[in-house]
Length: 343
Image (tube, rainbow, N blue to C red; front, side):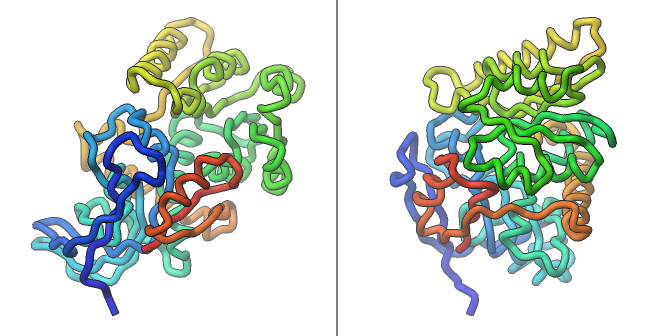
């Protein structure tokens, strides 16, 4: 029987995972153009790890409900929404609000999930899949025969990215701690241990002429090393500042430093390119175009999954009531893929 109670996780401030709170209330009603999605799966992303420290560069003021993306069934629809959407399983990118049993979203942001794809597996492909697809095909434009370096190849984005790169015909080098190397080899990746090896030196051994693309979520010194590892005509895609997760001070400064480096490097006449990838770029100025691109790219990711080119890597599935455990597990660095929460 469908529950009539709303359960959501509240992040009250800069707290340890055990400081997250469960809040109960009434299921919201959709407004015009909106739907209520009964959440079946939502994920623990790196963004939430930063948010609980107050380190995500554009997070809302505390308190708020985290949750970057979700998969669920449309429970009700507001005025102006096609009633046939009710009962459909959909995915949505929301940035915040996903850690809840019921989530109100604009109907235009709901992307259909193919039949036969489980909620947890689909969830592991939403923000991770869109990010990986847009960086690989939209920014770096990786083609068959290329060699790419993926930092954090065992992570949520990394596991999707290496599979998409292999499907595109690229040779993939991936950094991860030794415990993840067998899993990466099974995906066709040449692993490099960032804890015990000199990563730039090892990558130069594997790709003496440089790599055609680097995908760097670490920031700091790593992004500078990544730029130097590029072959002529290569592309660096930076998409985070994980190295500063536990720092204090301005949460915007690490991103601004990367943006400054990207601007400087692109001004150099050497044929290489650098980007700072922001999945939300363009939404404020061209919402319809943003939604169309997001829908098209996620549909491509789901299609790649159905073709067997990628397998969703679900590290663990835990209920909302165990969100502290889920967050600690995601932050531990011991898992491959994505930690998923269910109602």
